[in-house]
Image 1 (spheres, rainbow, N blue to C red):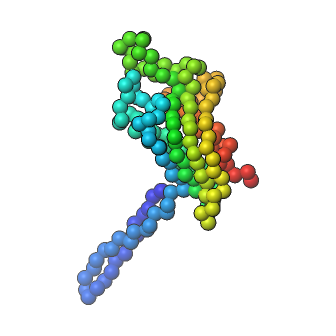
Image 2 (cartoon, rainbow, N blue to C red; image 1 turned 90 degrees about the horizontal axis):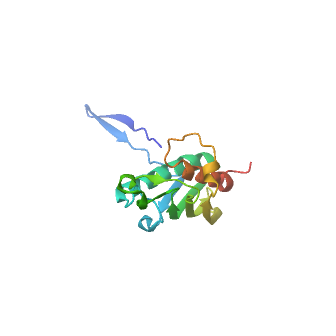
Image 3 (cartoon, one colour; image 1 turned 180 degrees about the vertical axis):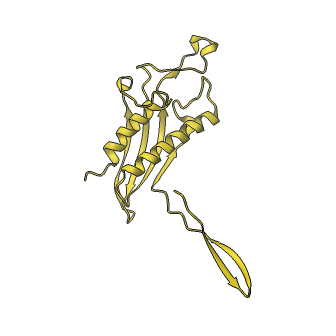
Length: 171
């Protein structure tokens, strides 16, 4: 959300001062949290993984959910999501040798999985819907995906399914 500062010019006893009126930003409609991400099953950027890599992946998932959920939520509703576990599609196979240490091998036996808790609130702050979900798709490799270059395409498709099933208004 962008806030545009409004510039006001005041004339006081012959002097001019510019004062920026700051609009209070509206609270976010979608809030995404990751509970103890260091304990997640698999959010690695290599065989051994780094905090920077993990945080980058989680940031990308957060931004994606915020973008999609804001479009799916009915006006006035807010969403809070807490991820309890993340397991990305594929895995690192160290037995393939040191040249492939940082190559994620994606096979049917390594499906993406999420465990999350969510709550949808209406304008009055009352809970409209809440629950815990374990998301997975064992046939994830059979899906047609638009952006084959996106390294999180399988995870995003599962999250899209969840958003469509749990958050879309029925109207």
